[in-house]
Length: 361
Image (cartoon, rainbow, N blue to C red; front, side, top):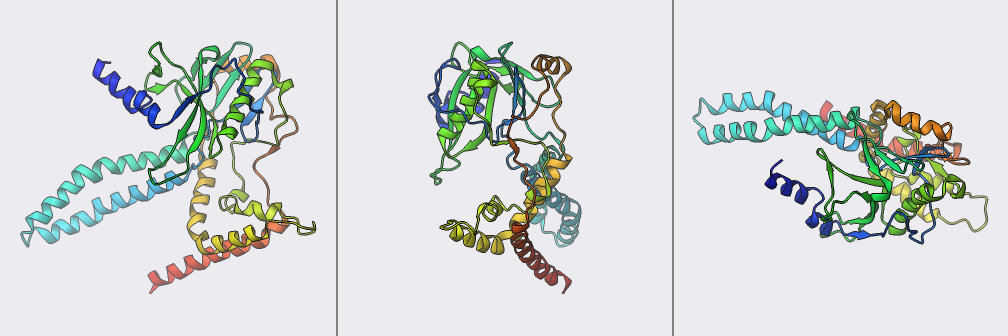
């Protein structure tokens, strides 16, 4: 790789300019405590005495991007093979050469390149992997990062630099999403690459609360430093497959109905549930297709499988299991949620029926 290609890769991926835009804040050393209490909720898949397996939180919106990609790909195919011949047939006899030139330009330089790109987004999202896993081996002081069909990237735990990353989606957005990254830096302070992959591991899902993101990192750090016996118990653990309730959860609004106990005096949360009802009744028709797409994507995705040697390393600590005492984050439907599900889904199908009636006419 030439000098210019290296500079472009660093600047466009994780070079100094990108670090400034992403608001990196050094957290010191992996051997030093951050002073934050560890929290492994919704972070861990499996663990034992020597090995910890977590997710990178990279697939929070799995299925949603794929659905958008499929829609864009179908639109490109429709324009190329249905509308373009009709437009050419209309323009040529009438000598509309400006329109004909515009149509050909649109097909060659926009639809032909973007059509396969949108189709790739759909296929990758629906038939890729459920999560980009990380494995931490406290005996060998190694971190393995799953990157798909190629061999996992191996990182040396003691050489990694933890940073708190803040990302503001747009200049008009005041919210900054926080996460903690483990970064492998070279002597010049730039991120090393393994082929086309930057040697960066992201811990868990992004959060609006920086301390929550740091607490997940502290859970991993204390596992590597002290072992699982010194860690607090986790309330929930991760699973690779979704359940039916995830389709009708409506971005967590269903949890409000689940958590309210009307028999308890002074119970709060009723106003939030009223807002959730109004929101889901009015906009549930737009949320439901994306929830369904996410459910299908997780069912079609492959569960990451580690190479035999890495699996053999994990056997030193015994069987890999979810954290002791933790419950699955994938909840099943309970009776008091059913009326809300029927109301929200019923309103969504009423909108679908109304829209379908216009096409039937």
